[in-house]
Length: 306
Image (cartoon, rainbow, N blue to C red; front, side):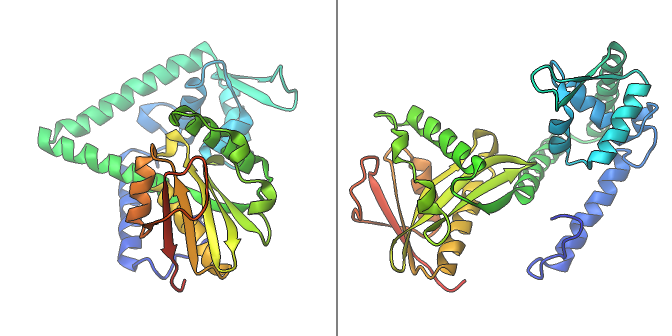
């Protein structure tokens, strides 16, 4: 949720308060409010930016940094200029694209990041050392769960045109993925065509994490009142978050909004995790409704009011 959004009435106020309370405690505890983060002579924003720059071999474009960190262009420009003035980074024009500027750390910048990592490790170790081994395990597990759920919460699932570059890029990645998994391979000509999943004919959703497309799903009309779900896919780096279920729910909502009473889908025998997800989401296995070379299982779900 962005800062200008109003909290949903479906979210209990006590849960909103609990998350805000945790945020206040955590930012204070790690020194996010201190102009000398980890005792170094810079605030957290600059320290994190320098960390990201040093962590990308060969330099990184300012455009990529802006998307990765979700920073305002003006704020990013001010911080990079400050780091450049301090001799921490070098900024140059990308040799492959003169519209892009690339930034990389200087030797002084690398030394500072090395010291930053040492201090951050010491701070984390000091906190964990006060806990018993069992408590440390619980804390680490809880943080992993929190990170997974916060990632999922921050991902958006957006309706796009079926011919949009991100839609076709996701389908290309989907095709490559299942081509490696299917014993018989996969022919990309089986992918939905843009006109099947655009406008009144259907819908295409792309999931975005920090500006990058990390998943997709398509809906097309089989017959009046019946929709078909196709190509639900999640990038490997965004799996095990629950994102496929989020995409599936968006497709079902869209199908209901278009007046479909039923949605159907098919899946390959090797995609056992997909079959389990569909069953868990309320789909029941049915006889084949279409002759599809890659289908071994066919499913259907009746949609209630949305």
